[in-house]
Length: 307
Image 1: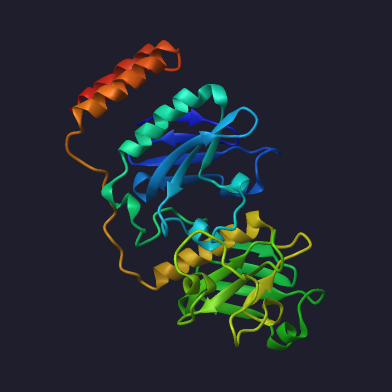
Image 2: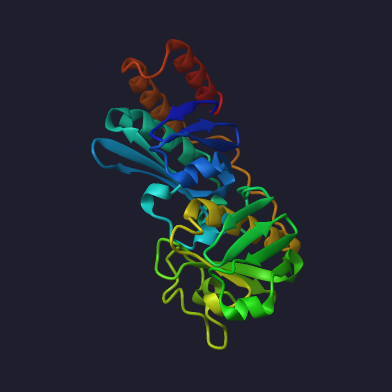
């Protein structure tokens, strides 16, 4: 597409095979967005696109990722608040027509696999090395090893007895992240061969029922040397969630899960009626002054070439 759509807190730049989301910096921008800085989302990683009314004279363009495509959302397991969803672009209501145009353009490049879960991560995870302070220790990740260093002011006697911990990614099977904005937040490292709470509940984006309570036989997070706990400003979302996503991506990669061929947007010629409708829509944008003469001519030629 080669176009740019600027919204509140973020700008979407549409490339030939992906949308590049660049988050703004500033006191009004959610700290998670500032931490992520930017994200490149292949069109093949998306399942659908929605445009809905927002709050206080805004509209919201949201790209919905395929389940399993983004390690950040997989780690979050449905616990992100709406305002921290990196796939929402909030725009002034007067830009609704333009947003509708881009929503249609995005829908047009979704392939037949859009309705299926992704077999691998398609959106890049935050990069190591990373670290953050939890309530009872300091967590670090260098890309191959996860380390927990306990604080004498917060760690339980069980953790002090076990000593500082180091976990090779190759020995892990997954992670469990419980938002610090909920009761009893924590990050737990799950040994290889152990089923996580999310896996036990099956696929989906809803929070895990009863999250915060370990399965039978597993210690509470504050007593488990494979966990760090959050609270009192420690382990905030913008630090602990990117950390969890980076670890999860490395775990999946180390497990050598078979990689499927990246889905390719639907090829071939499009329906002439669909092309005509897009040209009509483009003409409306041109008449409204939202598209320049040069942009109108270039985009029209591009659409006609698809016939």
